[in-house]
Length: 69
Image 1 (tube, rainbow, N blue to C red):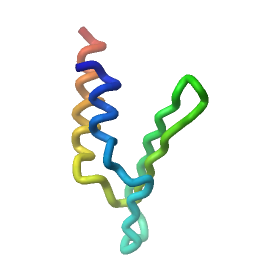
Image 2 (spheres, rainbow, N blue to C red):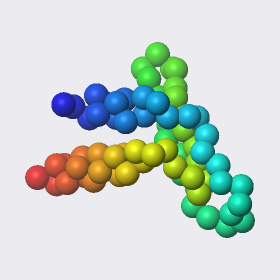
Image 3 (cartoon, helix red, strand yellow):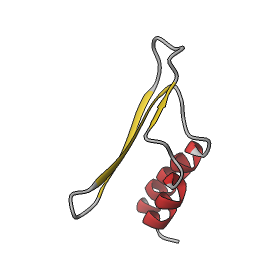
Image 4 (cartoon, helix red, strand yellow):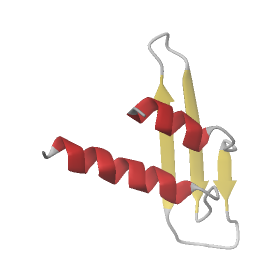
């Protein structure tokens, strides 16, 4: 399975925003997917994440690892 297939399977059911308002200072993240036609999908979070967020981290590290080979 290629990178884009894996990416779209991961984000398929994500909401656009994940916010934990109970934290004053924390981790913010953003994922923007830009398409050739100018369309984009954006996901943001502040101390809150989708249930399968770790799959994005795994995908990212696999790409980095394979690029080094």
